[in-house]
Length: 326
Ligand code: UFG
Image (tube, rainbow, N blue to C red; front, top):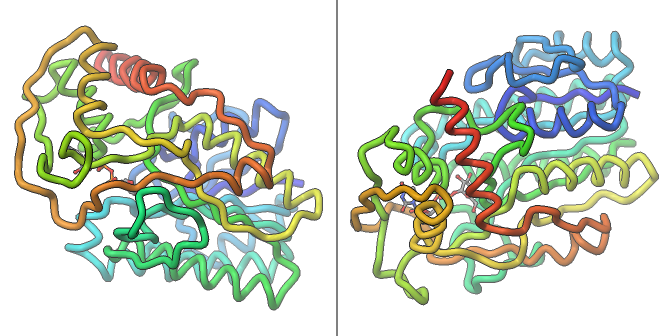
């Protein structure tokens, strides 16, 4: 029983690989290193460099290693980039996922855990979003992920495959042991950007929109520590291996922080100051998106261990300091 982890050299995938290895699971990583780093892959996991859309390669890996489960992280994930390059996003996220799914079913893989996103909801009518809210993505990124969810659902119902779709809200933080973290230098994610500003790695930062209908005028998001996502993945896999039914689950804490609150936390935890300039709204940003994660908590008995903004920021800072020294 070996798990194939696509995108296991990337930010979230590499954390999950460490989590799986710590539990003595056998892991094969498939990553084309377009945004991942070979040094992020745990030593005990074997890295194959290649594309998830390479059906021959995937079929060979499945047969050679007796893969019974796939965790599929490999994807392009930058929302504004997806608006500029929609075809590239549909190719990399949707078309390649279809090839992977095809090879998985043909190779007799039994379980599939898929990295989806809160971006499938678009701009929801209410701040707290449950899985029952109809998805209405506002970007090619969100659409590319939603299309994969639909392919997975239909393919699973016609085969023996069972799946869990995990819709991530705003993932942040790093491995507390600092074995891996968010290494993309040109990251656009708020906590990463603010931490880089606090460490003087960038000349201040910008706040995109201060006139939203939120308590302090800036956008509210549900920031989840990457290690709490690791436990959600492992529980999802165990659920499927235990004969559990396919499910789609939001991954977040159920409460949000504004951009101002994040900046204040980064200033507090880093004891550093930096300029944060108000700017006009960024295209396509919903005002407030928070996960109703009742289903995840109930179905998988998931309890977060890092639901504390200062801890998330402290781990993100520690990782950024480590990168700075390299
Ligand atoms: N923001 C700033 N300044 C920055 C960066 C971000 O003000 O330098 C603001 C954004 O405008 C937004 C908030 O901080 O209001 C969070 O922005 P992020 O870019 O960190 O995250 P998003 O909410 O836009 O998107 C993230 C992931 C998506 C995922 C989505 C789900 O990037 O992949 O969360 O909620 F789909």
